[in-house]
Length: 165
Length: 317
Image (cartoon, rainbow over all chains, first blue to last red; front, side, top):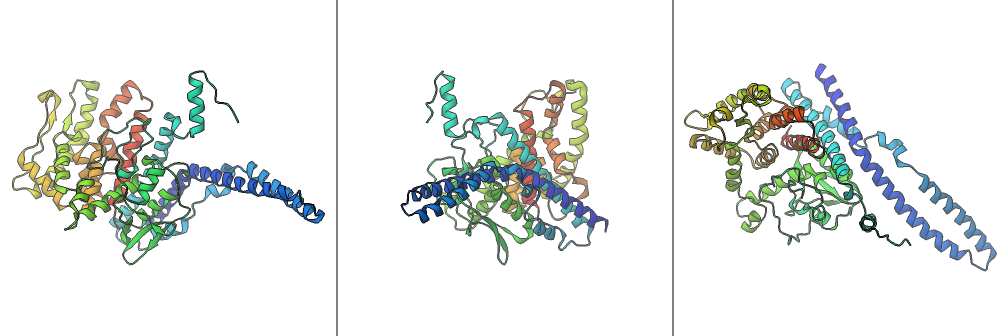
């Protein structure tokens, strides 16, 4: 019985580690998704604007209405801050994980101890992996920079400026 | 260059600005550029782009396979990245590794578990009789060659080279005596099962031997080789990773033994302890001289994540 409680404890610990280590990538993925969505909506907006030139007043009105809706949607997406999303506090596969940990938990203490150890190893791995990635990124800021930014900084180093357009 | 990844195809072509944290290249990794096998791992390394939306695990009778958009994820040699059903948590972690990736670019150091598992699968594949000798050479899959290289780590094992007593007021040596000597005695006892004569590991004591190389005798080497031969190919690949990370044959042995079916209670250690064994001297140096940024802090995590990853891959229900 005591070992069951311990298993549950390390399950919770594991979930916490998973949530924490996935946080950054989830935010990045959401931002990327938003960017794509905005690009798509902007494209639709341009075609709608073309429809606004329609001589038929009814069509024109409809297009205007749609345009307003689109603008609102784009603004919402631009203001969306994924780091505040509630989704970040959950691990999607927690049920599956719980089942995996609890199923066929044999009565043998040695087997349970080994499993506990395994769960601890996983939590340790996730923790160290996350910290490692953060450190590498901190010490190598160029890694995450996009090409445009790199060119800009290289130019700035020799006193030049990339023309903006 | 981050050369310690075992996915040879995820060579960090554009990451040359990252400095080397661990110098040991995994054994037998194809470092040539002309590697055009169409596998997911290769594609990710060449285009450095995320090209899938959905990662799932497909279950069949005996195996769990990681799928990217309904296509199996493949190792550098083109085998499906799948694990047996007694490694459910491993499959879950593989899935997590691929689904929690940054979408911008894939970095080889972000996939440690995938790289070990790929190595395991590819080594198992090339070890089958009648496999293409070219493929074997490509990933350095010749088991006897790998064994030979790994045996060299036993000569100058981290756990077998003891510091002089004059250093750190004798504190380091005291810690080494306390931590290493019992392990050495137990390993000697264990390895003796594989030899005719009792195994005696040669220790390099800096006070007695000064500066010179260290070599194990023939009996020890034969016993160690017999132990290596007794490992399954999967465990062998994990062992390789552990030895290359810790620079210690004994640490690799400890890791694998603790994840085996019936570990003996005398050899029981946690993974954190193994990491401490492997970096004991650094721990004392940091204490005395302070932590060097971008070196000690990164190394500390690197050793631990690799040891933990190896132990996760080794575990079997």
